[in-house]
Amino acid sequence: MADPSWHSAIAAGLLAMHQRDGNYFNTLIQSAFLPARSRLFAAFRQPMSKVRYILIGEGPYPREESATGVCFMDGAVSRLWAEDGSGLSKKVNRATSLRNFIKMLLVAAGALDPAHTSGSALQKVSSSAIEAYSPWIQQLAELQQHLHEQGFLLLNASLVFRSEVAPAKDGKAWQPFLQEVLSAIAEHAARSGTELPSLILWGKIAEQLRQIPVVADFPHIIAEHPYNLSFIRNETMQALFYPMHLLSRHRS
Image (cartoon, rainbow, N blue to C red; front, side):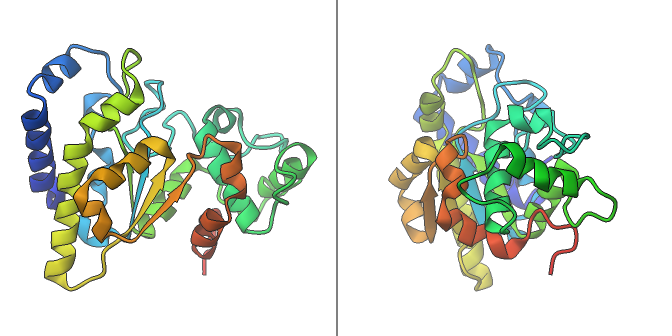
């Protein structure tokens, strides 16, 4: 699934993990980890040359259908809006991080008051969104495509979720992998004479990546994880995403 531009970085990253802990992969393959193996490197479909932003969350959703290998893109979600216009769809509401990200985008767009992001306020947006010729996108796949077009690499601090292992522990184990990935991106930028992508770290586990030496070379923004309600009102995130018009069908 990964674009060929990532193959050497992925191989180097996995080797670095093995060198750090020679038993990690033996233990991993004996567990029921998520996402499924075919989705593990799905985020790397974005070619390295197209990356302008590196968004790193915490870890995959803890549900098999939901864990796609792409940060906060829930595979169980198709429709964004409830069919009756009552708000966001039930599956979006179950995916807390995705729900709060969408609400943040609506606040940034001026469609929601940051003090009123649910109930009748959200119903007003939703009822408009499902009308014919609505300016809003309808499917999660459209949101993911818009992020892709903006140059996002949507990763997690840990590429796996295991119910029996604390996410922070797996996040620590994957740091050597991300060191190699980020180093490859930095080397590509140097060779091509382009600017380094912006690194966006969501949550405390992702914030631990600042311990990796190469991270200091990247411009980076730190925010709480979107499963926190305060994320909806995060003005730094609003300012970053507002110009992208990710929820708009017809973006300027």
